[in-house]
Image 1 (cartoon, rainbow, N blue to C red):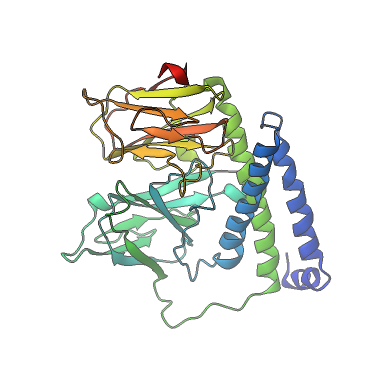
Image 2: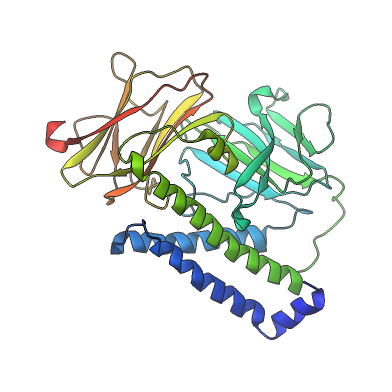
Amino acid sequence: MSELNAEQRVLNGQTWDDFCDALKETGQLVNADKAPDDAFNRAEGYRYLARMLRAGLESFLESGDSAFPQLRCPVHETIKMGADNPDNYYQSAPINPQYDYRISGTRGTVDYLGFGTVINRYSSGGGMKTDGFLDSRDMHMKEDGSLEIIVSQREQPGNWLPMGPETNAINVRQTFQDRRNEIRAEISIERIGAELERPEPLSPERLDKALQGAVQFVKNTTGLFEGWAEGFLPTTNQVAAADQGFCQAIGGDPNIYYFHSAWELADDEALVIDAPTIPDCQTWNFVLQNWWMESLDYRYHNIHFNKHTAAYEPDGSVRIIVAHQKPAHANWVETAGHRMGTLCWRWIGATEHPPVLARVVKFAEL
């Protein structure tokens, strides 16, 4: 699209009209054939679209300049997607393999810190492929906890995070076991050589492309995860091992082994989840989600456990109870007003991935 054409589209309002028309069409995703059709889940679905729009506008319009990237938190308490992990602090930034970048800051004490360069094709429905990965445990840091990473296609001495010829983003995961006491890593990214430069002002072409990219992100990302939720239905009320290749293809952490399923409970039922064997691992994590694969509201409800927060059985196993009301058990996961949704179990940094068992019982039988 030429600059002149973009100017004409902005001047005559076509840019905005096309954006609004395409956004209206995304509403059909909430009415997918297998998606729940009650008013509660429909309302969450429309809220999900609004959240995806916020994420898309932040990514494409406000933070889409790879010449001047900034690490931002794209998934948090009120923007959720793809079985987000409440134990994580997510960060991302756009990058361009034609440039070299420097990440610097302080390590903090957060339990897990991982950096990945990716090909992010969510806006075109293509998922996400990891090109390079760097675990903080394999990095050199100074005695004061400060760190520096060079991100480039050409190998560098020290902490090097490789890019491929199609890399377009960097993702950072900080995973906490004890959020109250662990200190988050404070890091920033800069393009090497940009010290005396400034970003160009907003152009009609950039606006036109950003609005198109944002709405395509809403459409394709929502469709991707809604279709994934539909695929969990055959394993409802189980904790089933996921297709690990697919998990990696849509941006999963290479250090994580994922279990995904659907769940559905009547008012008088509970889901008993047992992990008979806890392998040697950095941590593990269980999260309850809604149909749209958003973690339930962990600001006000206890909807997840990890290696640090869970209570263990005398034999070292773990039992978690998902129920609408509080059971006489320490590891209660609240349904937060939901009767159905999706769930995720993660083994993080484990050398083996034992099965996790689940069964539905009457709450009165607990």
